[in-house]
Length: 104
Image (cartoon, rainbow, N blue to C red; front, top):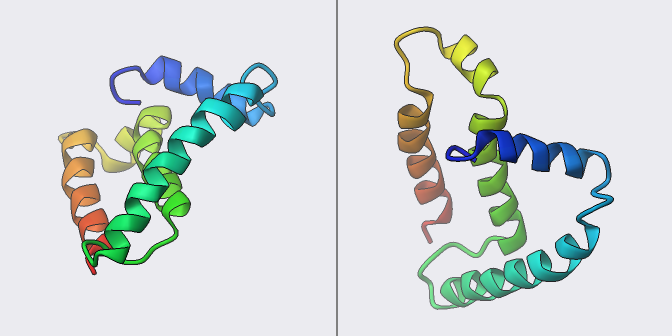
């Protein structure tokens, strides 16, 4: 999202419209990828490496929080005010948030 904010906004707009052009991809390749990553997260939880969280919802949370900074960059910059680097501050915050969230 950060590297391609325009494309991220276009993708979000497509999804908001019901994904008429992407539904097959979302239900196919994307679902398969999320299922694969979810299996890894479940295994890590079973091994006690991370907390036992619903893996798909963890992935959604990561997507939502990180994509927000690109899709709503104007809003984020306006709220933070001058002199703030939203991406640097977000990186530090999100690292702390997700580290604390997934610790067993």
